[in-house]
Image (cartoon, rainbow, N blue to C red; front, side, top):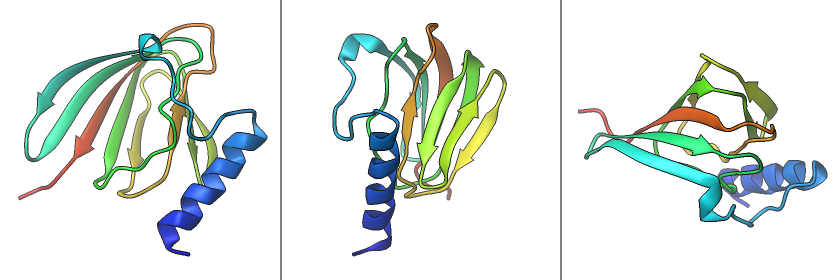
Length: 119
């Protein structure tokens, strides 16, 4: 079993233990997305996760920077749960399995910067 497969399996177990559903995506109405920039080097997106929304378990080929603008975002990785609050800037290494979830009763807004390549 490869390293990424092990990470995904571990993350699925963690999420299942807290009552999540690995593989079930949130209805589209729970997530609003505004793409600010998308080119060969970076994708910058402003996301709004309404209560109960989550990203499903996934990984990105490149690293990701998350900047929370409003509320608190729960981020699940193989290392466990992290609470990302207002103003937090979070670095996620490339190919890290993760799930982002709004566990609050208020909308969470955050910027996602997906780094594709740096020439």
